Length: 206
Image (tube, rainbow, N blue to C red; front, side, top):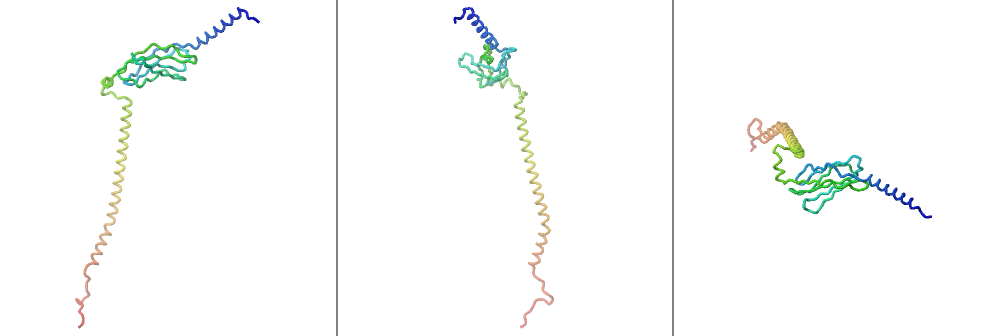
């Protein structure tokens, strides 16, 4: 049976309309408000936002040194996070970052490129005031103080044990001193010349 040309055209239009609707549902907008924060000598944090209603299940980040073709590609799925740490960066270096959203149907267009520069180690140290104390340094100081306190307590306990032991030994020695004096007096009396009965020295009969 020969198909009518009109019916084939209608079926083709329905198919194209279905594919277009599916493509429209899976089409994502590029991430918005891409920002680089917490720029350190060897690390940084990139954050972004997404358009409301986009079925985003992950993200992809392209990191590139300026004027260098080699790229680093970071991708995560099954996540709702809107930030990512960039690590192992070189100091005093310019980087270009793009962010893309990922859905079940594919990836969004890349965001507008973001350019940032990492500081030098010397610049970072110079910008840090002497009175500035980070949370990490506070934690380290607290750990050191706790360790010192434990050592001091242990030493005090050891000294207390030594003093108690010395006092007990001293009491034992003091308790034994009268007995020792009596023994010495007894021994000295036994070693002295015995007294003879009245009559003087014994004489042998001739």
